[in-house]
Image (cartoon, rainbow, N blue to C red; front, side, top):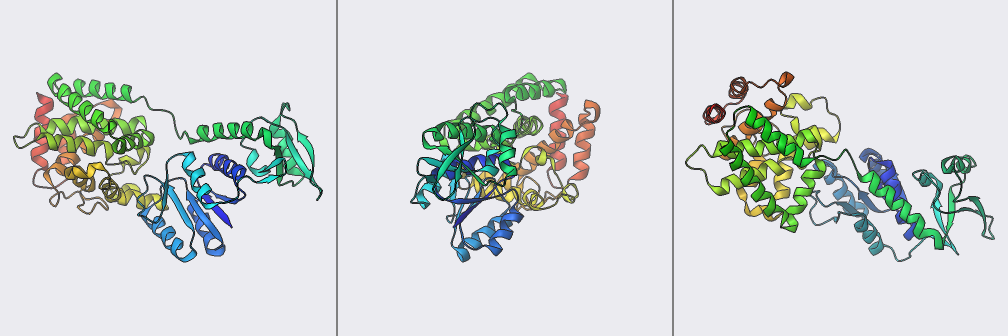
Length: 419
């Protein structure tokens, strides 16, 4: 029986597969798309498990969950994937190894003193950290075909591949060295994009806010509030994982929107006598976590028009992300902050959290404040030539959105920046 592993990053998949194949006598089928994996499940029911290395849409998740019932296989998904009780969750490479260890009784795919590796996977390595052998005939004799001193490992490997050789072997005593090289590949391919300098982005946000008229006292209010909440979030294991999800999925531009929305919404709230500390906390939490189900600049989609040309599951993910994120947060310690989850669910104007709406009459006042603040920040970020006209931005928001409090909140923001 086999396992299916689904991941867009082929090198990443091969690195994990090599580790699993080294430890266990199992077959792992690699696919880069969900469509390929679904197709295989339809024609090859003899599957022991499906490993998803990235979150999937609700519809894809529903498909795999139904298949687990009919085909009786194990499903392992990322920890941040809303999944219910029918799945095993993974967060680190070791979680995947542990999952397979629980399923398999026989460790290590060996031939006497040697361990077997698929040639098709070895091309992720840039050099030969160990000697590689070919098994000859049924008498299990081993012939060295690649030396660890070979200067061009890829060329040597291509010659082996040209002879249609499927497996090479490594002496058992060299396996730890082999795995060390593979693990380095795993960590290198796990890095999705250039690291964001979050402190620098925060400083740039404060500089921009000051340049367009936000007072020093208003900046201090935002900074003290945000720092207090991030410290509190970092002190809890549950919410610290949420912060890490934000940092992993952010680009400089998307994190600029996150942080700027927190600054603006806190100051807009402060203009009203009915505001409370709990409301301020809810707005900052919502600014941090409202889009953690999206990656990078996908957070800037604001309406159906902007996503109509997006094909596949991403279209559905964007449409449903507010609802799915709220459901996810409700399962964490943030569930105690009901206002945060409500804002997250409603942050595109829909009470259900599915889709987008310019009519804000059916959502809460805090959600209104959040939407006006976030739209204000997006228009600032996208200002042509970097020329920001506060009055024109707020006028545009009041024209795009309808609702009892929209004009009031736009006027309050104008007063803040005039002051």
